[in-house]
Image (cartoon, rainbow over all chains, first blue to last red; front, side, top):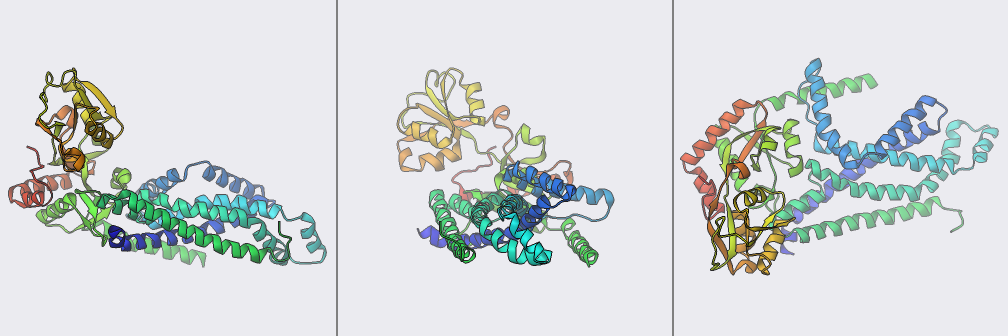
Length: 229
Length: 255
């Protein structure tokens, strides 16, 4: 217990990195998810194919492999391109950027499917009704699609977010000092690995519990006027 | 607008890049392998490897920066230029030599046999004949035990912890492992109270390799030579001994 207090600062900074990483990658994932869903449902064959390739590749490869690929392979690639073209010198991909980008891209693929499913769940007739009333595309999106899409997407969204929050632990392999990394090094340094892993366990549980409360409030908000199941 | 943002990014990358080519020397360390490398409560790095790395930098008269890296990504990070040298208790092995170059060793803890106190056998091929000898599977110790003690009954384990546990409860007559690990992980603990080292140090280039060295990128000969000179220098001027004494009860250089 004394050690937990002693290394408390380490755990706190690690937790902060985990939260920053999760939120920053969530923003990327949301943008990619909305774009992906839009592309998959658009009439353009090219957009459909691109989005299809994106979700197939990203969802078919382990997160860990992608993280290692971006962090190590990405750096080598960028530098060899820079060296052979002479356009730029040595570039260092920071661990935080590599981790955030990779996790954002991975979970963007899952969000794509979540959003696509949610949009498809909206009865087609409602959109047609909007068109026949003379509503513009953006008006239909804002007043018909968005509020219902959010409601349909929320359960899947919550799921994705929880998995994503926990997946941030993977970035400790590239040495980003997140909660898992700091708990592991503190545990190894003090020979109290179990104690520190248990502390990490509790902190992750607190983070997910807090997000659960938040999502329940969102779900209540977007389910106004709907019958309770 | 988009083009301007793009140019700004390119400019930012271009401005930040030259700093890397110059000093300081960046050294990859682990921070999760006490007493060689660990973090203090305030997050600072400490341990034998860290002190040695700092001493080598002082001996080379160079500014150094420690970069903490998780063990599994150590060699990839070196190759990706995340840092220039690895000081992380990395054994010099043939397999690793295919990927990186090594300096001369900066330490090599010998392997030793541990048996119950007052055991009536010796750590020789005939002494251990028919004895149940525990070693960790897939390690340098398995290689050595098979080569040196073919008449012993080898018992293989997944982890070193299991070897110590089975030795403690009497399922093994003896075990072979790194002397330092045996001392800190077993002999110094209550469960190892009735046990002791048996016989002498075991060093064998074929199985145990050439010790623990500093890894640099392939072909980085200038840095490798400078580090070799620095290792010699701190061995001679007593810096090495001072660091060694701080962590270990004996000289772990192993000559």
